Image (spheres, rainbow over the protein chains, first blue to last red):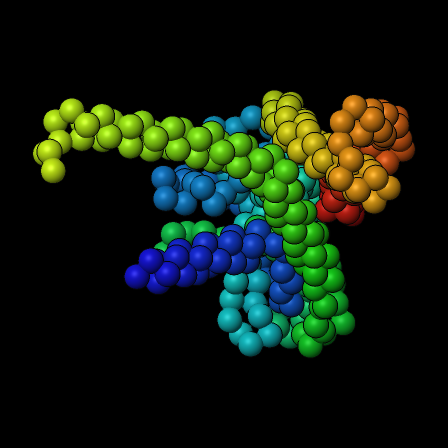
Length: 218
Length: 90
């Protein structure tokens, strides 16, 4: 039972970490841009978490503001809508404050299905219609055709660095336990043993005293 | 305002990281000295051993190896600058 709970907990943590990375790491879409615009958007309490803070350079109302959107079509014909927001300074750490430029670039790359221009959009985040959540576009670049595939070098580097950091933190914890915690516990254990031994002799003494004075005479 | 908050928060996090890593490598250096002593004079303890380890730690304190830990501050700041450059360039 305990081990089932433990594995359940580990699986849960692994899924949360996986989802978090899937949301945060950059991914590439090959699409054709069909429209770009901005609209006043009022964020609710459910989806506010998934939007950036107001633009890095301007001061805006927190609840309702203009957000830039980019509409696009996949080669398969499915559609996708990106938001185009500054990420600000802290999280996620894209340090993007060129939303206006990106919007201009996206507008310049708009194309019709008759003479399509295919582009790679770098984005992070998910599209969840139910919550009105959109992935945030980070960059856009024109490519030769709809069949290009992009090898995720950057993600491999990021994941390797993260793995290194986790490994190093683990090494630090092991060292801390071996050289700081264990000696402390060992010292405490010794003291406890001594106390126990003393208590034991006291008990034996008391029993003997009792027997001597009140024990049944043989 | 966001920038100021990011700088303060970032420096705080990096300082915690720096202290942790410094403690780690200090501990590694001390263990190396203890092992060296154990190899040369197995089982011998006392003032001579303490002195050997203390002088070794003093040497470590002035070493380049220890100063390299300051990279904990340098590397993320450079990384932020590089990311910001590549994300925002046209």
